[in-house]
Image 1 (cartoon, helix red, strand yellow):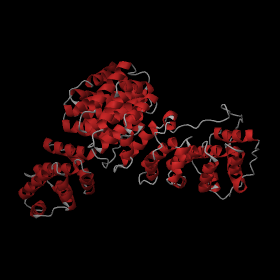
Image 2 (cartoon, rainbow, N blue to C red):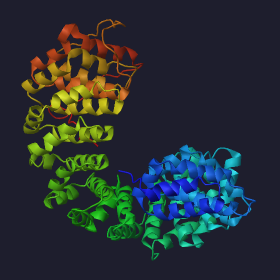
Image 3 (cartoon, rainbow, N blue to C red):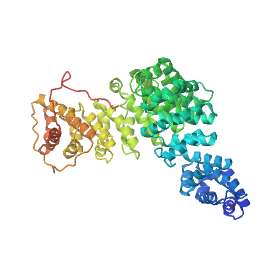
Image 4 (spheres, rainbow, N blue to C red):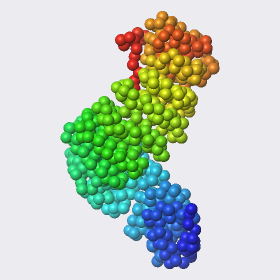
Length: 592
């Protein structure tokens, strides 16, 4: 409950006073109360203090005796409201204070400029801050002037704008071409604050952009890159982390840069050491580690040799972990187990699976998502699946519950884990059906979200792979013929899945002769080619098996074959061949 005692009411009353001295004292008192106090910030926001402060900022006369002080104090108070509290940022923006703060950056009074810059930096730390337009020449010029300014608050503001708003490759390219990287590199020799904000901005510009990375590496005859490598040895942990992040983006962009084993090992060891940092540095080190090893088998081997899994497991034993730390650890473990069987075996030997399953019911959606992603990576192993590690009813029941989660990202991640767990092994399929999983999957094939449809069909495809007739019958009845047809039929897809369906029927001497396609066929076509491909693979797995299974393709006057025929007619060139693998079966891929 927000406090509405005498002190709150009195301060609000004084803020509206016509006496500038009374007003100034009230602003100072309010500012001192809310600094570092989230509860009081929210209380004053609910009582309407922010619009009053915004009005003071807008109405203050900079040329009057008390004007500059009112501007400085009201700007500082608005910045305090915005610091670390999205509700405060929203209140400041709704009150119209943002344009007034921006105008004050060109004031002649240095104290006014500093106060405005600090407040704007607080706003730009939130995702709610306005998006900066780097493509407007005037705005880009202003940003570069901030970075070139000797004022630490202004350079920090410029860096904060880049960190917040640089999100696309086009934005990275335009910043690079405008010379932002050169300006940021010059700040690496500045104060600790300038150094860290510069490193974070450089990382934002380099991220997943090989073209920009190439230009960056060549800057100053590679001295810029050498400077960042040197900062990985800095005494401050946040500086080391940000320097590592820049180097990770450089390394991941091309096989030409920083590919020696020594550099990779050094980055691994630094990040594992930073895990011991109890604040945000330790949290973010987990995410940086995940980025470093993701899809890189060579780096994963080095991390395995550095006992990374043991290190993360030791941190998981801490029951008081912050949700962000827990999310980061699961994502790092997922990346470590994505390629190497030895890593998966190590993970399971440490009894981490119980902690992982507990996390499937965690309050934070990001943690639930990360736990599912980790389970998907660990279950990418035929050896571990056949050993029965994932036959636990608690695991399957938890995943089925997540199929109706309010978060789409959780649902998609749960589908990925399910796709692996149910493949090829009858006990898992039976438990999954007993928990009501089939009904949930079928429902998700009708979702408006294409990622949910894709992953739900993928899971069903793996469910029917090598399934017995009873399992196939139950899935087919739940899914319905018209739904299968609608998932198959669309605007075109790769031919290989058509080949698979044909190749499965040819050995059984079943001739597929598509009927003339009727435009109004009674089902709505799925618009996503990826969904259509998985649906055809689902049909392929349905008809594989005993001769009776082929009848699924002919159900209800063959509308499934109509859908397949429509796809055949749309294909401009089809080279039909019989694909066989030993006994004629093509193994299902585990979900990546």
